[in-house]
Length: 343
View 1 (tube, helix red, strand yellow):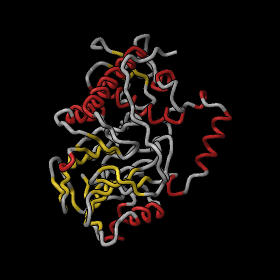
View 2 (spheres, rainbow, N blue to C red; view 1 turned 180 degrees about the vertical axis):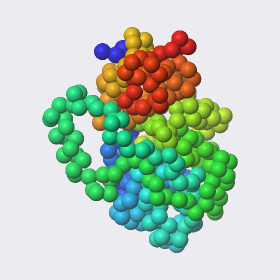
View 3 (cartoon, rainbow, N blue to C red; view 1 turned 30 degrees about the vertical axis):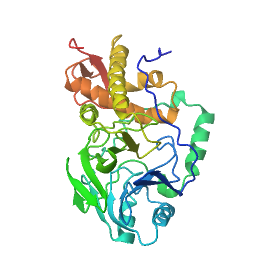
View 4 (cartoon, helix red, strand yellow; view 1 turned 120 degrees about the vertical axis):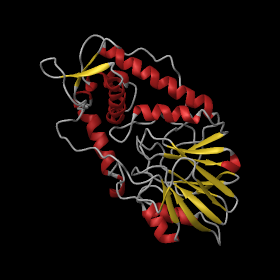
């Protein structure tokens, strides 16, 4: 059994009492409507934010659920309009509803750009944890999946969203009494943006920094080096609060981000220790590293471990082996890896 990791992340998971679809005033300038799409990957659901009064901005409209669009529009006060629809990144629980919101309101959509690299389907390059999942667990997971609305059964990249206005790091989007500044934070996704709300010295952190869990970094679009650089980038600011798209706000963000950086450093060291006895595959040690987690999270966890492995290969501390013990070529999820002398 894996020894407890000495780095402790004090997560923020208590959302308090809330009703799906209801509008809650969470700060003087921010309202939030939580979509009813809770899963092991989205926590309690996607939190769509409404910023300002009068002509407002909406951040992360959410998944393509018509009921959620109705709830967001119902949250507007008489005479209010949506002029700006911002997207933190193009994943299926964040951006797909933006098009419907734009069509309903005439708003302009904003984001870094369309989704970049998409995983090329290779049926032979898939981790398999079936030996660790009992028939009863599999039946339970399948029943929960079957109960989901069809719109929520597809997870992953949203390759259809293209913003009306493409933003880069430092760009300003402003409205009546509110100012949002884009902060490019690739890692979880190459087009990930956070947004500073300057009037409240707070940050909409999307999936880059969440209170309930650490972020998945999934290649090819996700990069561990980019993710670490983007975490370090946030330390250059002094925000009072983060508003992630999933879960409650983060009241002491600087210390929290530092714990994320330490956690990733420790995860990398764990991987190195698993490789020290000899060559092995990612699927050999993910169940040990993530033994305490919901087994459905092992698959995205394997993506993050793969991102760590790519980082080790790129930095010369690990290499890929072929069946004869020679150079194995391109690193894959199912590759056999070994440490080099540099590790």
